[in-house]
Length: 253
Image (cartoon, rainbow, N blue to C red; front, side, top):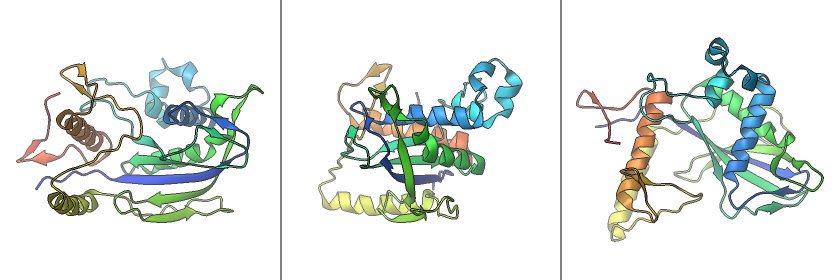
């Protein structure tokens, strides 16, 4: 049986707006920009000035994370080891004092990377997020609680409660066995429901097939895109590319 040697950590950050925050229709790009800015400012403020310094780019984990290049040694398409997740029905205008939450998925077991991303996601609100306000600054956000969430079951475990400043890092990651068990249960549910599967797109998604962009979702190219992403993540940040009959699994791109 095919086994995918990849683990994932799904975190949910809860906080409140210290000043008004305004987003465009989709919040992910703004959150990603704030995360990147905080990583640079907190861990490598001279990183952009040293983009041509090969030694620095090789040794600095933040620069490696933010400026991955396909130099031929990376198997498959370049993938980031994290993904920001907007929560459904999150408003684009958040007034001071109102709550705000977002999700962050981290792939693999690189402890240093996990620590960097935890600190950045928890602190990026200090630099500001969202659109520039009339006072010339972006909105400020303070994180007060972090949960580890199992997206397959909905179960959540608090790893930093309000009033705490340290994250408990002994949570259980999500791996192949849990996904396989949920897939088996889902297959039974599908069989009982005329094999109808609903896919909800939380953010704009570009689906490509044969170098053409699909204007409407089609299951085959969408499923292929997902499988390719999982294979690449496993190869680049997990235990390697999955093997089948002694050969690495690969799909025609």
